[in-house]
Image (cartoon, rainbow, N blue to C red):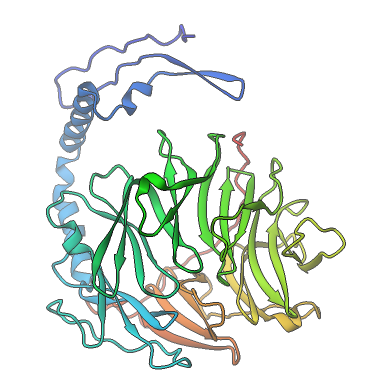
Length: 474
């Protein structure tokens, strides 16, 4: 099927730098879900086609010619950003298990160095103050897990995908892409020796997740269109050829993700399209078992799931939009999530508040939401949830800002890590103490050159929230 209004092949571009190159049109009929359309540029997907490469080079040359007069401005902006960036830096350590994990950067190096150091004891929840070494030398007491600069050496391109430590802290699953095609090679490192195991799995998507005992590793692969579509299970120490396909999604409008609940009780498969989702669960201690769907997918229904222990019972918190445009949070029994008799509304639907995330900790529920277009975080103890007590909203002084949870891997941690920024305030990290409601400032990203967010003239601003029109995509 062709469109008679458009020629099959466009006329060639002239050699003049003022004339942009024009891609050849090669009509290809494609049919999805009963709808047929013509894609005239499908051939441009073939990155190995010499004509595709030639066209891209022509586009790059044209762009460079048309924007050559902007080179001084680009250089000036780049120099200013670089001069204001503190290159030797260190992230706020995050506790997971018996270790504090952090990443540090060194001036002149392109990539981060990921490290850890042991906690002082079981009650050590105060991130250690660590001064990064200007010369990149190892810091006393730290263990370097992965130096991306060393991994990138000898490659024109480098990207880190998975970075996942096993629950007992003994193994690191990490993946790298050195081609730029977003297909990662997954490896496993013995953290006691610093040596990689023989396990090597090519062609994976970004992440990886260990089972509860660390003897299995789950990962996702992509199809020819780079769509994450298949979940695999790998037994640590075995060849990749023996990996087991756990789940595959044939519908091209859905993407697949994998993870684990913060409680480490369940492994999760997430399947989502633009407007429909489905979540499947498996006991993390039984990695070879069968995943079960929480709610079978229904067109237009989106939901997410977390595991909570409420009054000693295993419950699932389900954040959903079934009959609730701005989402509603309910809790149901973990062994019978479709129950209509043992179901309680935790946070009802509100026309003025859009619920965006529900995170369960051992004793508290943390909710991320929007009201009046502004991101907000609220907290409530589980023992008061069903008593009708309102969320305690964490307050900030600025009229406009963005805040969200960040780096909270432990189920029973006494604090919640928050990330905050605004038009005037650089990226800021807080710990919110659940028992006392104290907000502790841990770090504000330095901006060199004398910038002070407390004295700088703050920009005039306002906010509006609008719901984007729903597309026809599934």
